[in-house]
Amino acid sequence: MEIVILAVVIALVLIGAISGLVVSSRKKKLPPSAPSSTPTVTAPPAEPHVGEEAEKPSGESRRTIEEVELPDAAEATETPAAVEDPVVAEPPAPQIEVPEPTAGRLVRLRTRLSRSQNALGKGLLTLLSREHLDEDTWEEIEDTLLTADVGVTPTQELVERLRERVRVLGTRTPDELRALLREELVALVGPEFDRTVHTESGPGKPGIVMVVGVNGTGKTTTTGKLARVLVADGKSVVLGAADTFRAAAADQLQTWGERVGARTVRGPEGGDPASIAFDAVKEGIAEGSDAVLIDTAGRLHTKTGLMDELGKVKRVVEKQAPLDEVLLVLDATTGQNGLVQARVFAEVVNITGIVLTKLDGTAKGGIVVAVQRELGVPVKLIGLGEGADDLAPFEPEAFVEALIGE
Image (cartoon, rainbow, N blue to C red; front, side):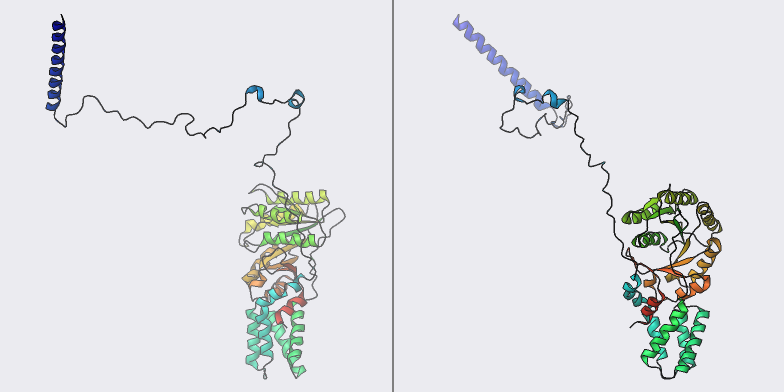
């Protein structure tokens, strides 16, 4: 029996060995490039299991539900305290500034003015100090005045007076010449003009000031600075943002107003300027304000339709209260071209005063004389820089002192 079992085991071993050899020989016969009948499947990268990227738990033991303290009934029924959302919270109110007093502003800004205008005064003094004042010298004096945009007629008048005074004076010491030139220039600028910015209207009515001018003269900025001038003089102001055609003009004016506590009345971009001006005056009356300043859109003086619209703003405003001032803003650096603008605006809205901006950036201070002669109205304010308080009331004596220097 044992012999039979052993024989069976040996037979099974031999059969297995023979089967292995057959299979191995078949694999060797397959060509190396033969494609496999079973497609190769590339497994996607393993996704992280839940919790693999989480922080490792700390070694502290967790509390059971019984250990968690719950609020009592009284605390649970209390009104929850409001927590302010920092994202939607209103921005803090801007800090109200105290504008620099207007009295003596031009004197304080004299150095800035003299840097640009000193060439005119020094040039005239140098020419007048020559030992022999012949015709060539007087022509040079005329050229100096014309180059400074004084204008033809005022220049001729000044030269004639200087000729007569020098002839009568005889001796010409530096101090005598300086006093002579100062006196004649002050007379030329016109000390007789009323240069007050009028904001006193009837009882219960604010003074109304409309600011006009072409694009690029600094009109909106001037309106904001004028608000500071009036606030510095103790007046309350409402601003009317009637320039609805220039992007961000209303925002710019409102920023100026907020700095001194003046409210700005504005409307939608592209809205009706006359309607906004009307609302501004209405609000000024309701609030009992001392003054309403209306900033109008920059008008190109060659566009008749836009000028007509400016006239409409004036008429609509006057239905509630009379206009106290119509201030024309002129860029002093434009020189004689500013006179062309002045003529057209004067025909439409009856200009009462001039604001000359950028006077510190030009040597043509004679435009003060020329524009006053052209319109018959005074220069009331001058801009001498980009600072918030660089708009100063015009004072002829201080202006001439800056021209001729020490």
